Length: 168
Image (tube, rainbow, N blue to C red; front, side):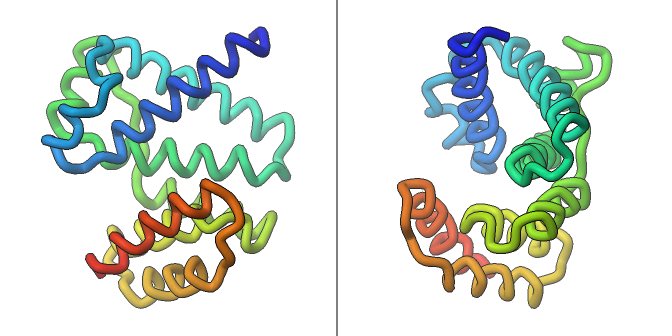
C-alpha cells in the first residue's frame, strides 16, 4: 500500500475505533464520520485486522501492533447487537473479538515493553473492569497515573483515565 494511502487508511481506522469506543448511542450519532456508510467502516475494520495480524507475523516483538490489535479487539467487543446484525447482513460474518482477546494483547504489550504507554494501562483497566476484576483495574489506573504526561496522547489518556476512575 502506498505511504499516502496507508496514512489515509490509518486515519479512517482511528476514527472507526473512536466510533466503536463510544458506548453512548447519542455520542455515536454526533461523531462526524458517522455519515459515511457503515459498510465502509466495517470493511475497513476487517482489513485492519488482517493488516495487524500480518504485522505481528512479520515483527512479533513490536508492541505497537499488539496495542492496536488490543484496541481493535476492545472496540469490536463493545459493538451493540444491532451493529453485529448489520455487519452480518453486509459481510456474512461480522468481526468478532472479546474483552479477553483485548486483554491478552494489552498484556503482551506490557510483556514486550513495560510501561509502553499511558493508554495501554487505561485499556488494561477497562478490560479488567469489564471482566469484573476491579482490584486489577484499580492497579492499572494507579500505574497509568504514575506515568508522566509527555505527549498529546498522554494528555488524552489522562482525560480518559480521569473519567474512567470515576466509574470504578
